[in-house]
Each structure stands twice: as structure tokens, then as C-alpha cells.
Length: 424
Image (cartoon, rainbow, N blue to C red; front, side, top):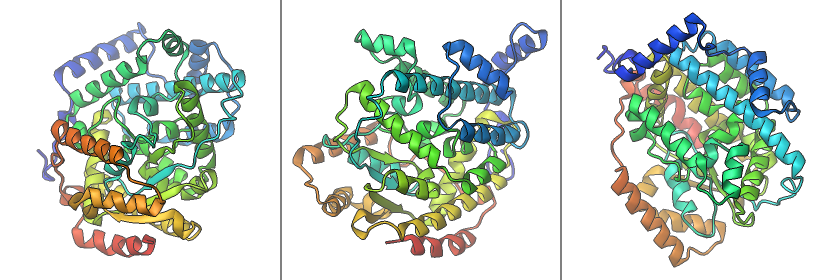
């Protein structure tokens, strides 16, 4: 352990992974295998060769700018290990291939864009504010809909997956995501404790935003300060326009009823409220609040535990400062945006209220939405709570604010006024 109470990043390298990477590195050096390439031109050529497609005109300029800024950090500030470079290469290549498949599907099936989605219920709150719990509670209601993790992580199935689905087989993306989760948690089991999930669990739409190389999924896994500031400063409207079209694609693929409102959530929405409001002006916005010291400490812990999977040099003090900044920035953006939301379309809920009596908290949410909380919905929510407690427990994530170079007084001084400003 180092003097901050955190293990060194290199301790998150099981023997099997070290052996695997040594073999890969030797193969790269000998020219037996091509190295993990992060050249944008060669990545695009690989995506086109593997898909047999060459178009990609939807928000192409936006995507190319995002990619250029991201690659600057991936080649420098991120301090990626060989394994981290391999993961980054694979992630970008996957996105490029899925973008090509997406455009081909929209061209072949214009009825996808014609789908009318019901105004969603959007849970908005900082990382670690209980947004996952609230999303899964509301999504348990049969009258609502939500993405499962495998749909969020692999939003555009390739031809082989679509062929399997047409033959009535189990969606291959479920197994793909299950294997990926096992792989990552085998490297650092803490990730599974911090955000318990599974391929069939309701989860956030981060993977849909990643289709535009935007934001939170990328920033929480790697040190990319230049990219983070770029995403904060540049309108992310193309991200949310694509996200909505991806939600239409999902409804088309699985035959779900678009009249059932989706329950959406990701902390990234806080910093992208302007784009979110333009794309979903009729949504119900449920704003979550939590004591700021817990929000920042838990968020920093989540980011640090993910970053050490891909880098051998992760500074916890930098992580703490970055997540304090991000939390403050998101609160400011959200507070300003809320001035433009009709009073009846927004509602505030505190983390502790849900923890003390989630049934009462949910009943208040339904009363605000003007919807009946039916007995079958309540039973489904109770089943979710029991299953989550049995499978994951609710108190396994341990973290200390001091490990990230922060003090409670300083965090409260900066964030409490912002939280009050953003409360409805």
C-alpha cells in the first residue's frame, strides 16, 4: 500500500494478464501481430475493411473533432499501459464499425427514424447519487421501458448478431458483455462492488453516448483532461440527436412499444443539459441529490478503480481534483438549465430519502408524474430490491476522501451552495 492508503496501480495485474501482455508485446515487436494502432486513418481503414462499408456521414465532422482531441490525451496524459492501449484501440474500432452499421441500417430501413418515442423519464444526478437505484426501481414498472446493459454497451448489432436474432437465437451480445464484465472484474474486483451490474440488468446509456466519442464512459476510465474540457465547452447536441436515433433503432430491433416511456439516466446528462432539453423537451426530469462529500469520494473511487485497469501511473490526487471539478461544473450547468424547465416537469429527491423509505419516495415520484403506482409495479420493485440485496448487498464499496487529496470542509464549501442553487 502507498502512503495514501491505496494500492499501487501495478498491483492490479494478475499473473495471467502480465503473461498475456508480455506475449502480445513480443508478437508486436517481432511483427507477428500488428500493434494496438491508434492512428485515426488506419482505424477507419480497419473498420471499413471489417464491415465492408465506407460511408459515415452522420455527424462525421463532430466525430472526427472528438476523436482528434481524445487521441491527443490517449497518446500522452492518459499514460496508458500496453493493455490500456489495446483496450482503447478496441473501443474506438468498435465504435467506428457500429457507426457504419448504424448508417447502413438507417439507409435500408427509413421506418426506424419514423418511430415516435414517448417522452422519457430522465434521472439526473451526480455520479454515486443513487441514480442507478432509482432508474432500476422505476424501470421495474411494466408500464416503463429501459435499456439493459448489453443493449447499452453494444447498441448497434452487426450482421452476424442480427442473423442470429432473425433465427430466434439468444442475443449474442449478452454473452459478449458477460465475458467482458468477468474479464474486467478479474483484473480489479472492486469494480463489481462499486457498480454491481450484469448483461441483463437495467443500466445507463453511456454506450450510446460513446457512439459519438462523448464524455463520461471515456473520462471515467482514462486520464483525459484535454478531452474532458473540450466536451464541457463544445455543444454535445449531435451526441443526443444520435442517442435518440439509437433508442429508435433499439425499439425497431426488439419490437418494444415506443409508447412505453424509457427510464434514462447517466451523470453525464448534468453537463449536457442544454442538448438534453433540446432533444427531449417533453421529458420528466427527476433530479437527485446526495451529501457532496460522499458524492465526490465515491465518484473518485469509481474513476480511480477503473483507471488503474488501463494505466500503471494513476495519481489519486489528480483524480480527486478532477472529480471535484466535474461535480461542481455539472451542478452549475444543471442549475442554469433548470430555469428553462417547466415546474411540473421537474422534481427533486434526496439520496437519504430513498434509502430510508424507497416506497414512500417512489410514491412521491409517481404523484408528481400524475401516474398510478399500481400493485404489480410495486411488487416488481420489491422483487428488484430483494434481488439486489441478495446478489450484491448495499454496503460493499469502501472509500476515503483523504485518499484523493481532498478534505470534507473544502468539498462542502465548494459544492453545497451549488447544490442549493440547483434544487427546485
